[in-house]
Length: 453
Image (cartoon, rainbow, N blue to C red; front, top):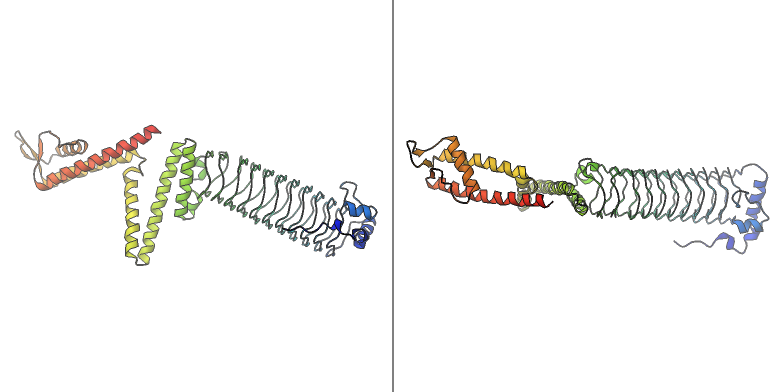
């Protein structure tokens, strides 16, 4: 946004009687007490103080306002650069585009103040309070603000590039497009904050808490997230390429559309499901599992990729089921058939082979179908013993199971002294043989995939 002309550049800066009066009151020896004071456009930078004949703070070189009470004051476009405002009270003040560059604000209270566009570059402000303050487009570059309280603050477009924010509290803050590039945010509290499109490139977030935060579209390129808590965080469309998240808490985090490639993480960190699945957003959950699957493939974690693939397919089935129910409610016959068929097909494929990932399920299908066709052969009475004293139809379970098993696993009807007789029985033999060929092919395909991995 356009910056106001610095107050100390005004031609009448030397003649600002308010500054001289302020210096005189400070010189009286007691902390300044002027709640609601009108200090708008006041020029109190180093040059203005020198022109006014002194009154500078020995520690900061600026205006000595340590412990001052300026709560509710009007300080728009004022210049307090280099001022000593340690433990000062500016709660509820209005200071749009005010300059605090290089000031000392340790333990100062600026809660609920309107400081949009203010310049806090290089301030020393440990434990400063900005709770609920309006700080859109403010600049905090290279500021030292350890354990600062910015909870609930409005920080859209605020610049914290290179700032030391160790242990700072941003809980519940609204911080769209905020810049934290190369900032120190170790052990910072950013839970339940809106950090959409925030820039954390090169930032250190070791042991930071971002649980439940909205980080959609955020940039974490080169960031350090060792031990960070991202439980329930929305990381949709977020850049997480080549990050080490192996020590992070990711329980029920959301990843739909996230940029994941070469990112270190494990299935166990997700707590059994991504956040979209927990919320019942099955279509988004499918996209989330797809991003995870592709990432785990990129780092060679094939078991994890298989898990994500199967979960993604299951989310697609759940979504189809929901669409089918909606079509039923809307009396949409075509939609119900379309979505119902997709749900049924996916459910069958899951039962048969777990979406092409389970050999044991295919073996189970073999066993069940062998027993089923053996029972059908017995019901039709169409299997005959060709020779010997027992010649004729057989109902012996061993004969039926033997013929059924061999018929399913060979291309031609088995030659074991049993012959199918009758149209129905021959039809069953042909169907079983065709099913057997399909299952054998499927088994070989899945086994080949497993061996390649």
